[in-house]
Every structure is written in structure tokens, then in C-alpha cells.
Amino acid sequence: MDPTTLRAHAHQVLLDATIPELPNHYSGKVRDNYDLPDGRRIMVATDRLSAFDRILCAVPFKGQVLTQTARFWFDATNDICPNHVLSYPDPNVVIGQRLTVLPVEIVVRDYLAGTTGTSVLTMYRAGQRDMYGVHFPEGLRDNQRLPQPIITPTSKEFDGGHDAPLTPDEIIAKGLLTAAQWTQLCDYALALFARGQAMAAERGLILADTKYEFGTDPDGRIVLADEIHTSDSSRYWKAASYQERFDAGTKPESFDKDFVRNWVASRCDPYGDDIPEIPQDLVLGTAAVYIEAFETITGQTFQLPADDGPVLDRIRANLAPFFSR
Image (cartoon, rainbow, N blue to C red):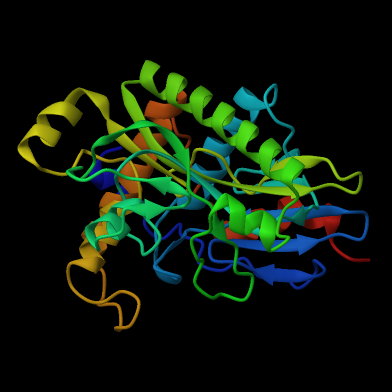
């Protein structure tokens, strides 16, 4: 999408999706959630961009991109793993089955990459060679492909604290998951990742790593929750330039929020310092990256919403049937 169009629509940004008429509000890093009495959950994707356990900025249309990208992938993988989706009443909204979220976050990685404290690249640079129950050899380079995809689980902190690396043995010993649950999660995660990599490759992309969240339904069945293979939960690189850039020791061309995250990390300690004001041109550039990623990944054209009022007013109108009476 051209910069002029994006700039003209920059006011269509959703920072907060508080809707008092909906019950049991819970605000996450990116989504505002509402639990209905009948066991359904309303999840409204805002345009907040989260990294380093904090909100960095709001990116126009990011919430719509995330919801519609996840919709594409949920539809493309529901033969592998059941997911929580029930309906989509708005471009930014999914109605899902409420689940008991499992306390382990699953990240599948196929490359030595990342910028957060729990990424294998950050830990490898710090001298660690045994991570997540896997031994890493000496001599690996930034963004190098690993011998095979690995699962790097972390604790899921529900109180806003930092996630911490876990090994499979720790997961079982601490009672976070049963052995059977852990096996099932691994099977699901690796199969989902393989499907994602294959479909991304058809679009000229490398799916380098991704995060999955799972929960259990009232029958104890493991169900995929949250989102899947979006630009927030995944690291996409352009395949055509990967090898040349790797050989040159430069970063791959990416389709993820490293666009902003790298800018912040180069200017401050993002875990401890105040975040500097992020330039509007960078925010709009990030919006363009999200939209380009959506179109490249899905093969669909991104549909700008009608500019007929605040985004939240449209969402409220579409969710009015769910308002408490």
C-alpha cells in the first residue's frame, strides 16, 4: 500500500477496545477480551504493538491484519489441530471457545534468531550452549538454520512477569503439563509449523520461528488458541535474499515486528529504560509491512475499512448483539 494512502488513513487506529456493555473484560498486551456467560470469549485485536513485555506504539490496521491472517491459517490447519474459533463478527474480532490456557508457551524455531531474552540467539550470544533441553554446537552464526526445527518452551506468566525458559523435564517435574499433554503439544506444534513453512515457501517466504498457545476445553481436549502464524507471533523472512544476506552477515529481510523492535533496542534498554518516541514515519512503515505481509502470506488483497467513523464505533455496532441486557 502506498505511503500517501496509509498517511490519509493513519487516524483509523484502535489503541483501546474497552466496551462497558460487554462482561468480564480482560485487557492483554494486544487484545481486549470479554468472557460471555455461555462459555464463549470475544477477542478484539487492537492496533497495539507489544514487545519487551510492554506496549511500544499503535500501528494502524494491525489488529485487522492479525485477525485476518490468523483466520487464513486457522482455516488452513484445522485438519491438523482443533482451534478455538467460532465466528468472526468484525474484521478485528473473533468469537472463540473459552479455554483453560495451558501454562506453557510453545515456540518452534528453525533458525538461530531472535532479540528477546528467551530467544536462542540472545542466549547463544551470552555463551549458553544447552538451552531448552537441546545442546547447541560451537560456531553457529546469527540467523543460521538449525539441523531441524526445535521446540523452545517457556513458562506463561499470567501476571505480566517475564516468561522463563523451560526444558521438557522441568515441564513434567513441575506438573505444568502431563507427559501425555506434552507429547500432544509437541506433535501439534511441529505439524503446524511444517504446514506453515511449506505454505510460506510457496509464497517466497521463510517461516523462521513462531509461537503457539494451547488450552483445554471442558472435555480436556487440547485446542489451539490465540493466533497462528501472524506477523506478531512469527518471524517471516524473504527467501530470495536470505542466503546472500546470511553470507554477508546482515539481517534477513523480515515480515515481523522486528521492524520497530530493532529500532527501540538500538536506542535504549527496552526492559528498563523509557521508550523513546517512535517516529510517525516508522509507525506507518510498520503498517505497510504488516499489510504487505498479509497480502504475501495469504495471496489476498487487504481491504481498508470504510472511513466512516472511529474503529471502535464500528466494532461496538457489530458486537451489540452480545451486550449485557
